[in-house]
Image (cartoon, rainbow, N blue to C red; front, side, top):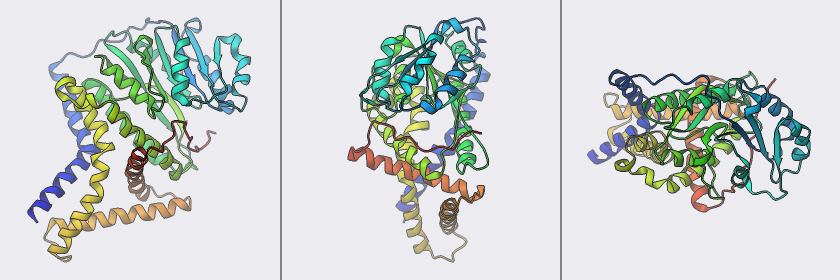
Length: 399
């Protein structure tokens, strides 16, 4: 019994630390750093090197006009802002449609074979001649100052990568919008504190940039190109910085089932990334970067989701042994609390099927979906049946 209790509290601590505790620790570490270390120098406002906006697009014809218009409206010298579109495998007319923008400084590279996003990125980087390259998805719109704000951070030679912020377009009929938006706001706060402490631990694929010279060809079967590319830059001794005002905005997933599809792939990619970035687990070599990486990424993709069913099982055993009506024992209360939480998750699932949104129920459901996705992603990764070609989740539309 005593051993079970110890295991129970260890597992509970892992889950708490992965989702809440690390944020608390990070907050205080940043506060302590500000006391003992001087503030960062302000960015150089007139730092304006040539930049390439890189879009790996697969069948994005419906978004081309809006994306190109958005890119041309960036607050950055037009003669210094280039666009490279790689449309490999697209068969919806995207490459031909883009030709009408060639005279506006847009370069289009296409081949009929589909090699996935990674293949397009590896091939397309050969055509990037500027010192900084900014990666962005074809279906996301950027804030007008995003390019300038990202570039300003590169004025610091220690910065090798800059991550923008993913923002969720929130409108009433998007079932997943509210909770997904809350989740990303929390993640954005953690990124801000990570950057203030030392380095962000991975960039947002919707908008991130690197020094072109630091790009390494990525393995063709890579699932999370943004994570692998950015952390390999960090492993070279550079930092990944973050500006929440440099943002890419997109609609939320059309529903939680579509969000689950997306997160299962991300989770499979997370396990793959942990394997490929295994040297980064060595805290004696990478120090604070390893601490941030393990705390913010690794635990959420490994121990935390595995701990949840074990916590419930052990709590059930303790509940049975101690008696269901022994309300003076904390394990009885914790078991009832877990039952209530999972019951709310179940109700949230049923209501979501009927497109009925009650935030108090949707939050526990979304949390369970996240962790279920990790378990499913683990299974998919170890079975080796996750395709490198992205199966896009259906998303709501902007109005």
